[in-house]
Length: 235
Image 1 (cartoon, one colour):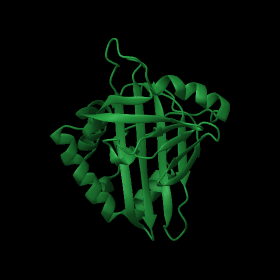
Image 2 (cartoon, helix red, strand yellow):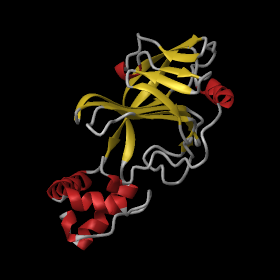
Image 3 (cartoon, helix red, strand yellow):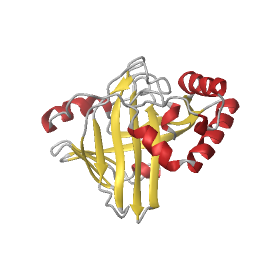
């Protein structure tokens, strides 16, 4: 998704947690066995989608210029207006306002999430309804996440903040992988698990892709919000 849309899910700035502490962080967030979770997907109003299509078309026509703009724009900042964006100044202002205020993550379905205990931590079972989670393992001994995209290593934790408008503020440990070669082969991705500030509910995030010579071979992008355990149900 365009950086212009400002869908800021991650605000971490401190050092990654140690392997010892990450286990203590993750333990209260996961429940062994089968739990229910909502699958969330981004939603935006038709007007924003229309403006976004025009911006995307303009960027594709000015790729070098766009790369230069991104290189000189700090995270969280808005790219300054330029006619090359394909919008008038008023439309660009509307685009930014809508992107900041009207994009939401909405539940589209409810699924079963199966979590297993393993000697090194936790693993999402192969019977999970969400295919992208199957076999993903949170290794708290090595402070890594093992997945089909490779081993993700500890990164800056997610920091809850006001810019997380699309999901609501949340925070927790995070892991990343970036093994892309100059030829465009390898994997790049991020996995995080955390807690929503407002409700205390656990959220699970995965965004990863595997490339082969610049071509996407596999892609996963998911955001889950765990549902509360039914009253009287054993943990």
